[in-house]
Length: 202
Length: 396
Image 1 (cartoon, chains in turn blue, cyan):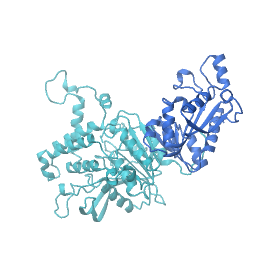
Image 2 (cartoon, one colour; image 1 turned 30 degrees about the vertical axis):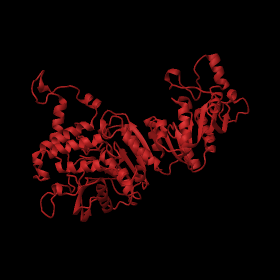
Image 3 (cartoon, chains in turn purple, red; image 1 turned 90 degrees about the vertical axis):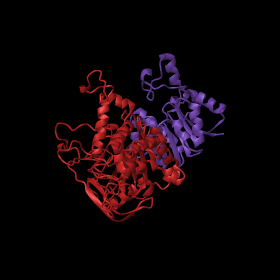
Image 4 (tube, chains in turn cyan, blue; image 1 turned 45 degrees about the vertical axis):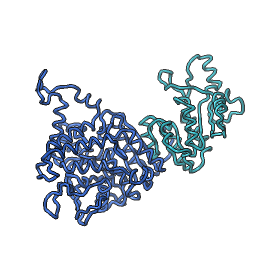
């Protein structure tokens, strides 16, 4: 199993612990449906995914999952408040056009919102920037700038500030070290490689 | 639906190539008892002409019902004879090893009630008079088409539909099957369709009907089998045909190219541009295979289709649905555009149903559902063939 796939699995396990069995889950940026597949198997959730890419939707359909090709904000606008028990936005946060808009719309259609992101304040990312003087490239961000989608890198400190400023209630946090497995005991903005937040409206 | 999305037959006779269902025969299903339409009107029995490919399994639950569009018919795959110029209209999708795999599924397609390709419709003889029904034929709805086809499926011994699928009006038929027979319908694929036509789409149908009805040869629907409003029907078809294509697609296919015979500047109203002769040809070939009254009835059925109005909301209309839905939209379809296909999916999801939406970027307009596209095949195959007790893996 490659390092990247292992990391993805860890991400699934943390989210899996937060998801209630048999709940209604919406996965924003669902990709090929790996996470939904895991949650359906492990937690018997009823899952729906949204993604922009035809082939990814096709892969979800092949796995037996419900998936919708389109813009996530327009999708959420089509649903009444609290349609979903949990909206998940993992590894997508840094690529959103309007992150605050998406998170607030998710907080409307979902009773809880899980946001997961790579912490760009992680010491390796800081040292990389300092000494290499180049865009972050690692097991998750494998491509050069010119082959990458536009990204809006964020840090744990940025996200904490955002939640405080917007009065978003943080139910749970998971800060994981660079192995994306071991909980980070202190200074998460420096020592955590990946962060997961469980949000709700205050 | 246009006639020409598929590639012309290769130099070697395609029906011998072994990659499709080969030579097929149509059959007739005769329902002898009275049939009451949604309008309350009754006919004393009807016939549906249909074709099947593949075999029904022992548990009688591997049937896939194909639903045709306005001008389509029951001949959706294979060849009627070695001299046919073209195979059935969805031959690219249906066959051994294809997206709708006839080695795995028992594929059924019937000409709709009200049609003119062998099923009972306005051009059929009214047993009471011995003359064609004409416009005394009962008004047909998509629901009547569905109920009559369910009788055929019962006759064939189908216990449960593995899937029902179609494009355009065929998508409406698939939706109606899911609503009318939820216990019977496990999956539905709805392509390039709508849960209710826009004013623009109704308007196009109305112009087509007026072209037919204003032709004096229509004679209130009372005309001889080979006669009738041939000019009106051809014009209706020419105009409708434009709505099945797209601006970019027509530009790619015809551009401003002129016919060879047109020369340079020619000051006549003869067909000069290729697109003109193409449309004239489409109109002419249509009148040889389609009945003008059937055109009126079926376009009316499409216009009337509006499950939301009948049930109060689309969510309520979809409430009985049990099977899973796959809805497919096409970017260049301006007749039943992506937004109307998205609306079907979103209403299904709001109603708590399992539904997916995928959208293909094409320039073939409304007719894109007939597209030869590996991406579309993979999607359809994935939806039809996924194993319900699949093995979990982390393959990415």
